[in-house]
Length: 504
Figure 1 (tube, rainbow, N blue to C red):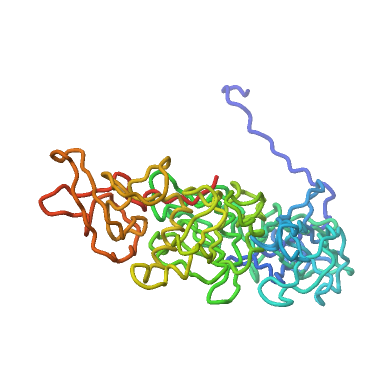
Figure 2: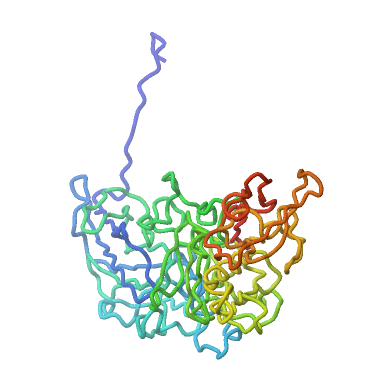
């Protein structure tokens, strides 16, 4: 300290190593903000530049260098996804489940790579081939929309020393994600810049995420599945679809990432890839015999159709048991951020011998995972008399059983079948327009609070019109509202609230 007790001024020194040595830096362009991965031979370009540090700022061009692009970090870790197949339900996971067996089976080749067959890559040496040997599908939605290729290179280095180089990255998965980086000899790394933008001027990692993923949830920032209703990040592994709202059962068995990665479905007879809505519950149906789903759309579930059994990894056998292991699974190519198996439904026409409108096989009512098949006798449902116009209602009724909906008045332990006496809350009770209510019964119903004998003779005029919707209340309507008598409300009704889709 000096005489006045004050501390002496701090002495600061700048030590310059190799004074006068020039500095060079290399950067990389960012992925476009609106890019969504597409498995059909999608090509994405990235440009690297070498700069010189002059007059306190980075200026282009710097000195020529060989530039190396890579999906491998400095510790040798691969920084790309390797999901099964190209989306959640294509190609098949196990061809032994399919008859006839398909030649193409899911593989785990890198989802992003440098293509050796692109003319723009002629100026590069390609290294680090990570091909598993399994063939990649050459048809995803149309013939040759994913042209044949035999290599999946993860590193590309310019053959010549240059100050700028543009590389092509090929995408082969609808949910692909990866980190691309670039390096050049004796160059500092500069933070990435926007395409056609100016150098950032900042020292830092030049890693670029494909696709753009600023909130780091492995879902493209430009995708509808990237954010929740409140605008916050949608976690990749969550499943909280809330439409339709049911009693304590959110979700449809598909995580946010899986819904973003998407599915191959059929719309209007055309095969297409879709990304599903993370706020709406989805159900997938293989309508084998073209029955259509009738009034099932009144469930408010989002109905998606698949054209062949390979799109849910094969049919189960035609037995009463739940689906065979590994079959009728709509997300069989699951990997990253999965929750578990989610099953689709198989809708078929069958000959009941005239005794049944339809039947749900496999142990239901219950979740899709126990539904072997939903069988409808089209001939009976479109016959004359009281059976007429019953196809839409019957199909919706049986599909309702496959998503956990029971008959009116029937608890899970009760048996199906015809009943001569309909006790209070029985199968003909409640909302007369509901597809889950039995109609066309001549019977009586009893009310526990009615004067002795407690029963009301309840003749039903035949034929009754089939139901057209799923009820949202146990309250009686139509024929079940008896003037000056107790109404025949359903002890088990409110069918919409019982709908469950999620298998896990």
